[in-house]
Length: 550
Image (cartoon, rainbow, N blue to C red; front, side, top):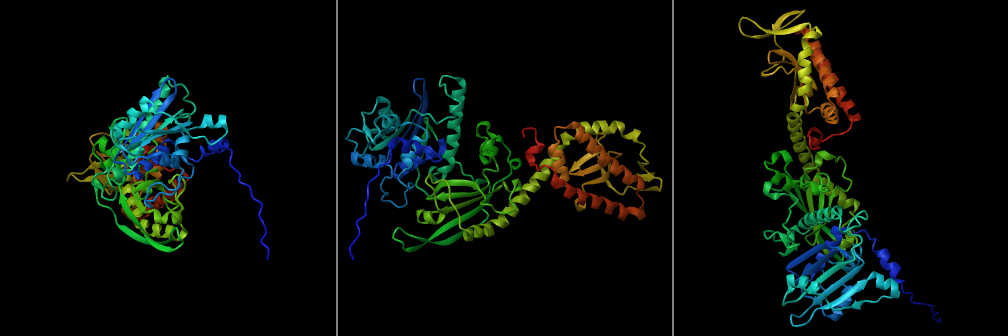
């Protein structure tokens, strides 16, 4: 058989259009910086220094220096190549050979890399300049002399030793497009906030590397504008032990197509609720969004699974569509750790920030996490019950004052009193009997009193409060939480509903007699049950809906 010839032609991509397209691979400022830090760690750096400042002529300049192994000219060219060769170390944080370039140019139009691999050599400087490439219409990597600023920033980490400096210039995408004037106060505020968020991001992503007490990863130091980045442990283990761990042995294929077995470890945690913490510092420690500039780190965004690849956090705040999850699960956090051998199995993306789980493994995670999630939900609801009862006292103050004034004018056909033996009594048209309801001491005339819970799940119950007829409300009942949480700023709505429950309680005391006790309680129980169902039609709420700072 005669072999057929195949007509081929090498087609080189148009550089400018390709590079502009690669700027939109999904990085943001935080993930882009982290990708550069990954390269420093892969180069065995012990210290990484990030410097960022505003220049009125060119806007923002950012550099990332390290004291890693550095590169000679061949190594530098290789690192600047799109699709750089695979690293010799399989456990490197790098993956596709694109991160340095795509991460950098997602934020800037001019990328410089200055490096030396020998303390006795002068550093080399290679530059990808997107505007120059658009002008020349070719893949032109420029070699330039490092500037004074370049050398100064490299020497922060690598004076008289090996190291590398990555510099971002012409940063046109680091801040939102609405911040266009570097001289404005708004630009400065936005820049400062972005650095604060970056610090939190680095503290979380590299926690295992930054924490000298964590033996799972080698220790490094990261500096941001001269200040050390402190580790942030999302599981807050200093407040209590974990809730169990499990190792899953998974099958995968190596680079040669051979089957290997590797372990993914899952550890469960339940963090303390904010009201269990005594100081603002402790609350910010568990929930960073207590800081005005870190609002994006919400309790909901920090609950769920935290995914660690080679001890580096790549993804978090994901429940992977686990059934039954809502804000009541926000205290639950699970760490899932694996190494590079499982990259293909988990389908790690180019930014190393997303994974996908097989249906089988996802179900295994759900089976493990389910009991812990239920415990976390129970703890949150208990915390929520106490919080609602505590914070709603002020919510009812004005309504109590108005209801106390008008109570005597309602023509209530029952009254409380004290007999000659000092026993509290209830008098209505059926006669006089011992008070059949809770007797509560209260120094003020407060006909409405909120409790953490009521027996049998009642929404309300008549009560003898401070010598006067009143009503208890159950802060744990869904109708109470959703109605009052939604209307916490609506005084008229609160007073109207308080009046309704007080009227229900007064009607019951007027009709009470021993023979009717079971029927009256059954009617109250049934109404509480029905209102529990009706509550599902109201907006869902959380603890914060009862608080002024919500």
